[in-house]
Length: 402
View 1: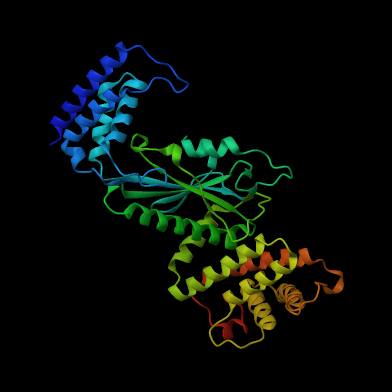
View 2: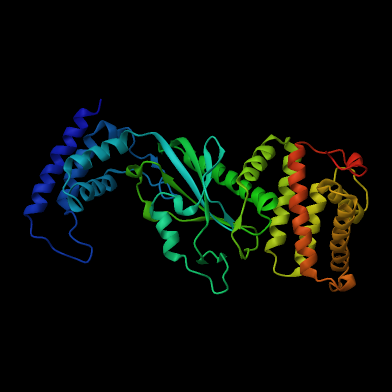
């Protein structure tokens, strides 16, 4: 259908190439570019192509933006690929024809993780996998991250969007039939949904597998590098809580536990899934807070959201401590100890809500109480996921779930 288009482009580019080689080069810091006449020749040739007429004025998703396709922009790229940077007329024409005739292709949404460590590929779903960051194929954005990565002054993994060490893990989601050239904004909708999925997965992993702060930066690439239009314009989308976390450690995580948690979470009914997500978001925020009093308040709220039910009027301290101890399970002595750990958290919570300073009883340290409660939260969420459905709390209060 478009054979004549390729011939038209080839003839025009060969003529421009001959003229370019004959002309006296006017060197600049950027090198020799096309003359106005050369660009005009290529623009005229492109506008004659049926393939171009089918896409003129439409949007090509690239680098997180959607540039409108026009003949001038294509002409400059064609010149660069076939004449300026390489002497390959046939390759440049083939590239442009492929670009103009592609409507859908395979996209890759990639996310770098700080705070999580895996040592091999983990398949999370049919189209997503978790992998060591260093195992990612080379790309412009991977190099951009590594160029900025340096050891932090205090040994942290991540402190700011501009100050971090090397990422230790990455998540890759393959987006089949991704909208490449369209007249609407379909590509942005697909991207937004994919980013939301990765954000939800990161919140889940922090709450039930990692138990420590994480930071995530994601970006988009095409699986076929030849279809990239302006990858140098790409930027990172950071997935962070309202308050930037301090990611101190890269926690090794059991890969089987990751897969089981994601599968269990995906099977939850809508209301229970929404409740747990709200709770886990609050847990993530509690680990990012800088002041102990704020960490206490957010963590207590995370427990209450996860372990409460509509119309549940039991006192929060009793309700959360008993249900947490029963969910985590174990011998009576361990359950009693865990119940007391949550009770200590709620003593701090009551002090915080009444405007007082945090003064734990019995010589305990606030941070130690928080760390113990963080660990119990992770265990409790893991048990809720294993159950696969919202428990009957009245039964749980009497007997630990099997």
